[in-house]
Image (cartoon, rainbow over all chains, first blue to last red; front, side, top):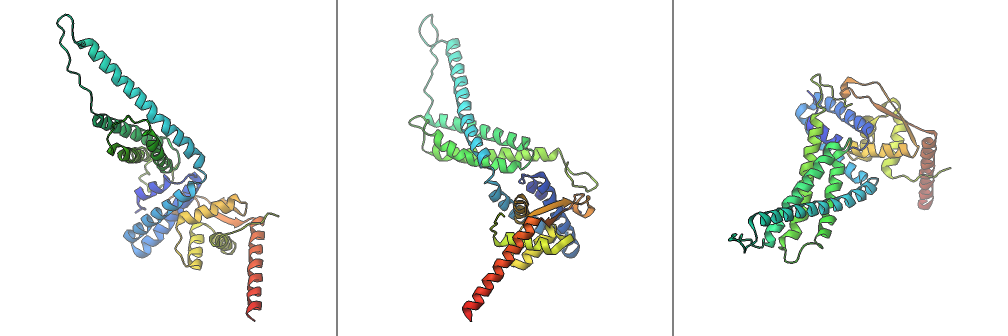
Length: 220
Length: 107
């Protein structure tokens, strides 16, 4: 029998200092064994999960101060990333449209058929922008979760939070006539996709250092 | 000499480290502090406080050999540094002085 594996990894992903991670997880494991003998493994695991949940809140609160500078840097990057992606994506779409028009002609001359090109509705553009934002947020969160050696979820949380002002600022550049729902949906999509990607990245990192069959949980 | 100002948790943690001796590691400190203050502190709250006190030079720590009951992890034991001992004495002196003033005011 051993403590809940998922809760253990979750706590580990919120601790900035690897030594502190070892100390905290060691203490929790030791107390889990003691409680497991006196109250049973189920009660001990419940206690363990509760400790992890309370500690995560505390670690996030205390970790936000020292991490403010990286958070601001992350916010600047987060603002630049969607702008770059949007520009690249819009450029690609324009090139495809130009290529299509070049291939099929634009009407007139030598009996060429006119392609029925219609102006795309703003709602469709908004939906496309949301999909691009989802991909952008997911990839950003995933890479951050995967590449962070310690406290991946703290960084993912900061990135997700930094999307909100960026998404609100981006709406200054939104074309006139875009649907009203876009303004409220964009930050939500970015935050959720970042979390989804971050959890995926952290989980993939965890899967690479699964505990051994001997029950040893020491991480290298 | 540098003056330190403490919250009740920091002071209680320093006091626990001074009293617990060999048992002054995270688990023992958490139990002692929780019992004394009547609040079940999370392991995260205790360790961030310990880290802060160590950063201020009031605590020192060393690790033991890996222990099986900790899943192969070592135990970090804390002890007061000379600065920590002075800070604790200063806090005790202040508490005694306040008590004396209160008693004098009530008499």
